[in-house]
Amino acid sequence: MEQFTKEFVYNLKLAAPVVLGMLGHTFVAFADNVMVGQLGTAELAAVSLGNSLVLIFMYVGIGFSTAITPLVAEADGAKDDNRAKQLFKHGLIICVAIGLVMFTLIMLTKGVLYHMQQPPEVVALAMPYINLVAASMVPMIIFQAFKQFADGFSQTKYPMVATILSNVVNVVLNYLFIFGTFGFPKMGILGAAIGTLVSRFFMVFFLWYMLYSKPKFKPYMQNLKFSIIESKIIKKIIDLGFPSALQVFFEVGIFTSAVWLSGVLGKNAQAANQIALNLSSMTYMVGIGLSVAAMVRVGNQKGLNNFKELQRIATSVFLLTLIIEIVFAVFFLVFNNWLPTIYLDVDDVVNKTDNLVVITLAAKLLIVAAFFQISDGIQVVVLGALRGLQDVKIPTAITFVAYWLVGFPVSYFLGLYTEYESTGIWIGLLSGLTVSAVLLYIRFKYLTNKLIANTALV
Image (cartoon, rainbow, N blue to C red; front, side):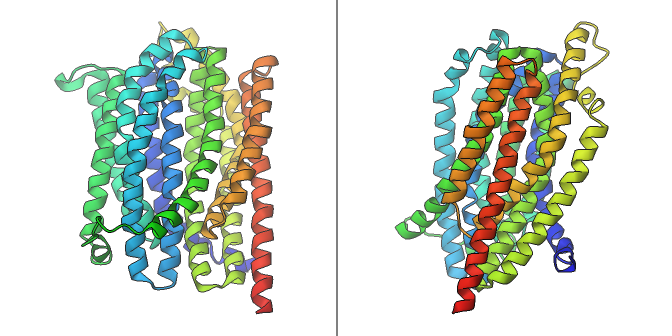
């Protein structure tokens, strides 16, 4: 056991800034939800519905950008500075293009919400919100190019700082524009969208400034010569990034389906789903951070062709994740009744009945969420390790099977055709995540054992 536990400190040191940075992204949604929740359940459901569409495209873009990290980590392990610079340049070009494509796709597909049996007043509120948040996709994905590049060099603290500061900007703007304080116009959920848009532009410019001002990174960011494009590098990033984007799409897609299925049950069910989803997404960010640690460390060892050490280090990250997720599961079980009250005003006389219904529903969902913390954390960390190995095609097939051939059918049937309703939807999520975690771990063990055996033969 010591061979694994001795890696915990370094794993946490590498993962912590990523966790804080990703929590920053989630905190944008948390701040929006808490502030908008004071306006009423319809407004909270509208933000949930708007984000359900936007987040599909955002996380697909982020998934695509993750290809940069293992490639840079491998180049760093091999001490190939020129390749690292070329990966950054081409990764940045791809991320700019992806950001523009994601914005366009959101604007073209937002009309589908009118045909998803969602509450009409919720859809009407969501549309203006979607327009502004869609525009924030461009700076958000560009930010990812800088972030993934820094992560590949194990310098995860700089994106963290940029994200935290952008959240301060977001919260301040939310307060000013949602409620109309200090003479600013009262704009409701549109004010939350303004805060998100401005804070994401701030985030990308601030991270660029931080990296450019550091002697370690400045040489990689100077004289990039964007007129010279190497098709082999573009192809390498796309070959790794596209399957990674599909993996994210399959997972985020099933959570989006949970939002839409909840909307069929009504605005209160949708608001409760949003509360439970927002809370569980914050603990999920710890798994994301540890998955980056696994991806970087595995990528380094791959560059050194040390596969036995690669397997040991990856296993240490898996074990650490398991321990942390069990703690989160206990936390959700103990505080499931109290946590939803953060989002809604229980003393609001006008909305008191709706608020109490939402709180009760959300508390039940958090019991299920407590159990899928473990599966969710393990699957994302093992997926990170597989990306570090640059193994993406088989994991993509696994995530499709787990989420769409197992998870979604269970959610659909239990949610709409049984008395479980909202809880049934989340039991489907638990089923998909558990199947994904088990199959991905089996894939990792098979692949690394094969690599170790082949190395021994040589």
